[in-house]
Length: 87
Image 1 (cartoon, helix red, strand yellow):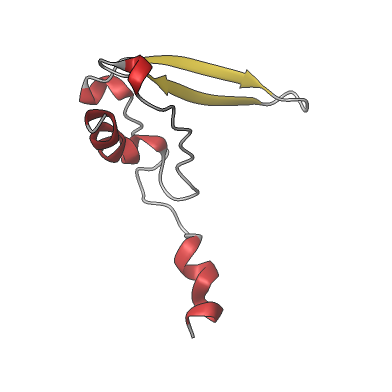
Image 2: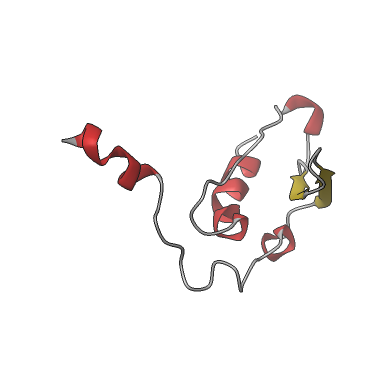
């Protein structure tokens, strides 16, 4: 049943071969961004990007996007770009 397969469908057990080798930055899609490094209480660092609105920033909501466990954030920019352009 769908219930019994939910972990396999939602949490990918393997990564694409290039998921740790090729990580595009937002400039690949000409998106304005800042690099963020967030320290954690256990002395780790979380890396992320603040992708800014291209225009009308005050009229658009802020979206926090977590890409999940498969691939890397670079695999998600095309969808992020569509969201950016829709505002």
